Amino acid sequence: MTRKFTEARILIATHNAGKLEEMQQLFAPRGVSVVGAAEMKLPEPEETETTFVGNARIKAHAAAQATGLPALSDDSGIEVEALDDAPGVYTADWAETPSGRDFVMAMTKTHNLLEEKSAAHPRRARFCATLVLAWPDGHDEVFAGRVNGTLVWPMRGKLGHGYDPMFMPDGYDITFAEMDADQKNAISHRADAFAKLISACFD
Picture 1 (cartoon, helix red, strand yellow):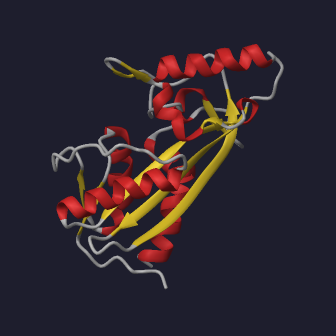
Picture 2 (picture 1 turned 90 degrees about the horizontal axis):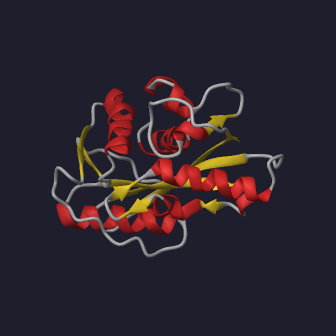
C-alpha cells in the first residue's frame, strides 16, 4: 500500500536551482514547505547506477538519512531515438566541463551526432523523469513520467534549463525554453511523474 505524505516539510534532494524552482512551484498549492539540498549544505552523492530510478534512490535516501526529513529526488534526462536513447541517464555527464555544466555544448554535441547519422533522420526524443520519495526509516515510493517530442535546431528560447531550448513537445510549435513555467509544468516529464506522486501520496 502506498504511504501517504503527512509531513509539513520536504527536502528536495537536488543542487540544481532550476529543478528546485520547478518543485517549489509544483508543491506550492499543497502548503508543503520546501527546502533544497544546497540550503541544507548536503554533499552531492555519487550517482553510480545506470538507471534513472537507481540514481534517484541514491539521492533520496542519502538526503533523508542525513537530515531526518522526507526527501524527494529526481533523476531525469533526454533519450534520443536515433542515438540509441543516449544520452539518457548520462544527460548531465554530456554537459560536464572543468568549470561546470555547459548544456549549450551538450546540445551542440547531440545535434552534431544527429547530423552525422543523417540530416534527414527523424529527430524523435523523449524527456524522462523518475521521482523517488524517501522517508528516514528507509521506505520509498517511485513515480516515473515522460513527454515525447522532436529535437529542433538551432536552439530556441531562453527559459527553462538543460536541453529545453532544443526540445519541442508533441502537439506544440514551441520549445520548452519558449514556454513560461506554468505552461511547461503542465506537460513536462517531471509534471507527469509529480501528478502520479500527488495522486498516490497526497490525494
